Image (tube, helix red, strand yellow):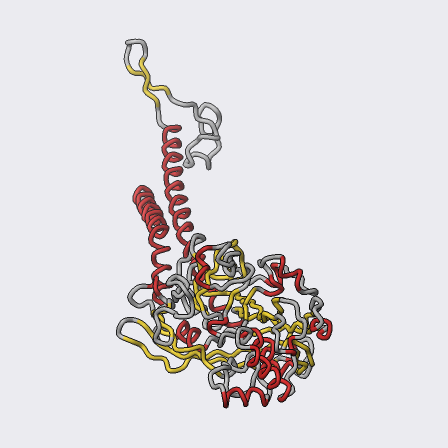
Length: 510
């Protein structure tokens, strides 16, 4: 093959390789983003993502801690409550969406059912453990009825005594969680229907197990990927009625399991929580890596449960008490129940002065979401909330004794889930390794092309220099005529055809 043609061919190939690699630099991210959008849309045709959304195969757990009251008698006498944290009691949470219905406007409706199964191996203790907590039926009702006529309050106190209901409960964890038989509950449901949130056994989580979170209608993302997972309505409502301002009644964000893709550090993660009766919003904190997968960590801002005095937009959630408490009485049958971060983390420090035994830290009591920014898929989630009961002495209801006004923590729970196992491997392969391979390929093409071009150029100049070295040089001989100057031939620069014969320095062959 002619060397010049080969050089030209290599030059063309090198140039095309560089062009192809350069094009990939700009087109590659677009291809990856298009694949992400295509695979994330809520559609039964997207088998992997649809199955993950429908059945949520990621392991979810609910971890529960109770605040065991150590001095109930002293509390009734007006002394400061002293508590010890008991637990954790861990439950595996199974989630499944049912009644899935797709609509022409690119939304889908569903009921999400949840069920809980106790995990003894992950728990410290058992459901048979006995703890003492405030009796919401007595102390909560006392606060609810403090403005009723004195005679009515005396009658209520007599009713408590009749059914042998005291200010504190000492029962097993299982009964406090999932319900226990109460003659008082039966009486109230019969004569005052609707006063209590449930009609069966009374327990802190009795209405959670084997139940759904309401009818969600969310966007599928088929028409606009920026809307995927965002709530269109909940139980047919596009806004709530629990709160005092339109802003607080807004149903913002997603259902809290996934978010739209292509999240930036300026993005927030809003979601609607039926259990909190409102929308919540997380803010960016830092970058991180989980099993080789890049993530953004989002946390709750200090303003999340701030009162209206400290953060004006929260005025609609009032009547408020100290910052760090969310009054959920309006969606809990007017019971004086408040939600906060565990151990009053990020709350007004005065709350810690009312109760002994609390030690808030960010690592143990702050809530967070670790999310893959390119897809909007959470990799690790920990939502931690504390249930508190507002207690005080109410005249006429002797069960309240001389209780000082206090925000009493009863228990806190953490709902957490994380991607692992085969799902994590698939996620890492499709969304980390393959895009990384494409990035490396585009630069490999550029480097390979440039190396080819450089090799051809170096070879060209090397050959050119070699030819110049053996070419006779014509010089002027001071006007007499051209004179050819010949290089002396030595054994080192002798043509190959002569190197096989012996010769002397005068070109004579021996």
